[in-house]
Image (cartoon, rainbow over all chains, first blue to last red; front, side, top):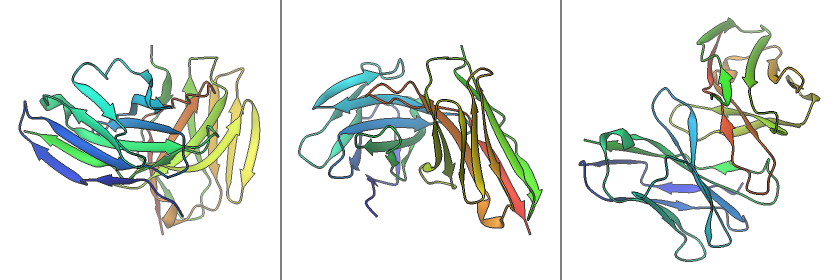
Length: 113
Length: 112
């Protein structure tokens, strides 16, 4: 069964450093997303990406965040200057035309120290 | 305003019990409702979905939506230890963009 692949599975970074989280969505999917889950809290929407541009972003997704789909397969989330409160599990997801067709990756656990 | 509310539990039941998981929501624009299952350190996996109000059954699982009360439920019959996981409700307005709004998740343990 097709899956969404995320790397790395765990990243530790110092406060103020830049991090790039990587995702390979399912190849024929059209919509791409990043969500995050702070320990013990809800899964929260960050951003959606469609037709090579951001289609929606939440209030969390401020100027410190950016997304790219540099080629036909990868989808990245960059955090320019990490803060302690950015520590969370970050999930990439993709889907086709159905709103039910979300597939989530296994996540990247980001720890900011 | 909290969009989706879900009791986080934990919920612990014996094998064979009927489990009831619930969420309430505030936004009447939500049209599509989903239940995801999440194992520790894994991404959510879609378990059930329904559109608007009504019931849907799939094996031991039944999903119910009551839009008039803004209340959704997931029932698990004959629960098994393998059902032990965190169950997340999620919903969306159904625009093509499909942003999901999640509940906090209910942690379920089914003991043998």
